[in-house]
Length: 528
Image (cartoon, rainbow, N blue to C red; front, side, top):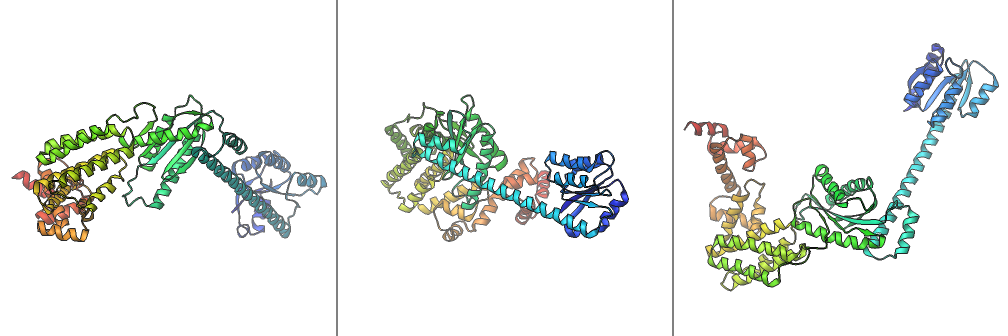
């Protein structure tokens, strides 16, 4: 709708104008009336209407003065004058200042309708012109931004000469005024196996991270963001006094608070001149690799020292051997201590490298398998390969250590039970007893012993006499009984503790199992 203001020092004229033409049918809404020049001026400044129809001569300021003020403010408001005076001087000055038309009272309907339509046509033309200019500006900005991204991508890859890059930066108006450049490499910590993060969802997340990082970066410095696979590379041009680690920490914090994800950031070495961008990128990648050994959402700045391997391959081999010996001795305490010592040595051997730590872990499992094969405990090739593939997917060293502990426990149990099926059942039961609080599934349990879910269902019922869901429910209910009788937790809290997000579902399941609701069971237990 187009907004219009009507003004005349005679209210009867305004009432007549309202009835003279079908305003709403024309797409026009009357938003105000004025009876003096000053009142009209205030109304225009406050409401900023698209169209004003006013008497040219009013108390406290003429329509000509209002028209001049509209021009000064650059509002683009169209003005149609009406007047009882027929002096040509009024009309000439009004039209010279940009009025759409000058109508003489009494106003004829057709003349007013014609003037209003002409004003609407002018407004539409100007709106279309503004839209075209806006789109052109957007395209120009987008094209410039794309060119800058391509240029910095080439600088990272080192396939453009310094002189050529400097000339392009000057032509594109990059805003890079400082001599210092630093690369920040951002990586969201998402498990590849997590089904919530499909390719489409990952792209959307990276887009959101890029927008957030760009907004924070440009509020402090100049720069460009470039995608590198599932990583975002921020090339920041900044003063040497500015702390890049603080900026990186701010970006990571915003990702946690607003996007609800952990974002690791590797901060490269500060470099002088665009020719140092490649080097800063390489050191940022090294720093990002080191976040593998830190907690989620870590920010690590590259440092020249303490990146070398501090444990030799020989020492690593000896630590693997100690774990293998503990298997053969069937000493679980000794095995756990030997594993923890081995994990420390793998981290020191890796020297900050995720790849080296995974290679060391893979080599460890292979060594264990070869050692056990010598005493008749043989892993088939498929099982071993599944272990090696799984270790490649971890985003944190803590996850890798947990997985290796599970493998070690499985090997120890296999030696203890002497049979594969007994060891497999023990592994699954241990998994359920350790993870019943989580949303575990039959498929997840089956994957722990590398078994087809359909076959696993039959296998589990054969050895336990109940299906997987029944067994899981029984474990959860037994734990719920302990909490009801031995703690002051509320029922909804106990439900969460034993793996139920819905307290009503937990209560129904509990009553089905024990014949009483949880609170009734607690009360009867306390009375006894």
